[in-house]
Length: 288
Ligand code: SAM
Image 1 (cartoon, protein in one colour):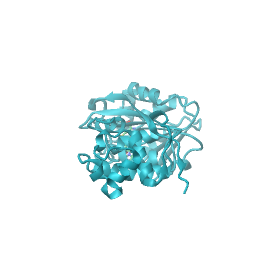
Image 2 (spheres, helix red, strand yellow):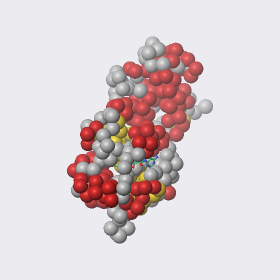
Image 3 (cartoon, helix red, strand yellow):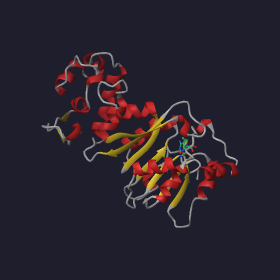
Image 4 (cartoon, helix red, strand yellow):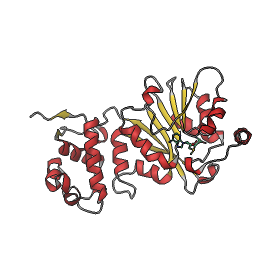
């Protein structure tokens, strides 16, 4: 299969373009493994972003995905991807920039997302899928290793920051697979890792998420400072006290529940009486 994909690329005269972040997975054993981490799909649709020559697409078409919808920005790959269609009506190829597409217009009902992401737009795409109006049933995404570590980091880890707090507030996030640079054609400069995220039932609503974004931006913008200084513009020590957080702590030691408390205090949302699993809790509006 490796040869087939390579031959396919050669037959279409396709070389990887740096500007599109193109590093291809041509080994179907690897792409099948990624799809196993992503599934089972149980007949639900899967959106694959950045299919390129279609190594992951082939594995998705072998899976129990009901439909496979591809979103590829590089027009050179569209004819080659259309060749993967076996006429059963499961495959849709869309030429578009994934940053601008409306996923709810591509699929009906809950759908899974799978992508070997272009590294240059990986983080903005993740933020779009976690905080935008459309929520996937799950996300299985290849990032450069450092970004994957930032998504799953815990308080006290060097990689702990805004991306960890926002990702974990919205979803359960697990790093499921490491891949060396040599697994890709051409090899990138960095190693990669796959993260599997499942949005939480009790994820914050838009208002709380906005507040969480404000609080984490300020707190991690000055991560070495005590919260009473880094959060000064948002209420400083008083805000910390309302949230039950020590104003002398630094952002890097505050866990998800702590940040949610700070965000609620900032937005004037009543704190829950007892945290639920992982700290993302159901909210009630404060009665005035
Ligand atoms: N999935 C393929 C694989 O594993 O071999 C290719 C992965 S390659 C790292 C990233 C792919 O994303 C490329 O095909 C590139 O053209 C495409 N791409 C880059 N930016 C994109 C964007 N904004 N929207 C959609 N696709 C994009």
